[in-house]
Image (cartoon, rainbow, N blue to C red; front, side, top):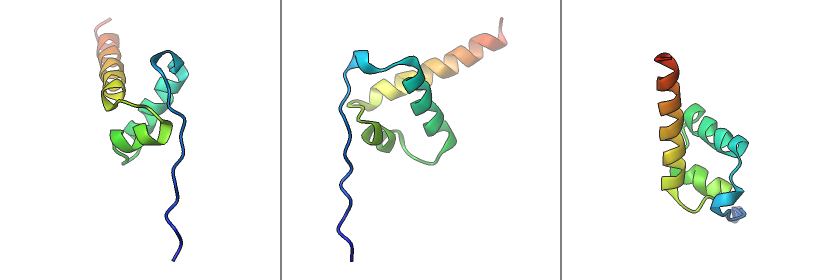
Length: 68
């Protein structure tokens, strides 16, 4: 029996999140069966609500495009 793998990550602060990073996280959540909590853990994002706001903003931007 193998010991459990320790998941290591780097905690980020708000100003560390680039647009490319946010899009990568959002795309990973949308294209996989992983939960937002597990993706937050994977990328070292301290708050699930941060990612939820990125998801909301992305969906809002997609809706705006339809009405332009």
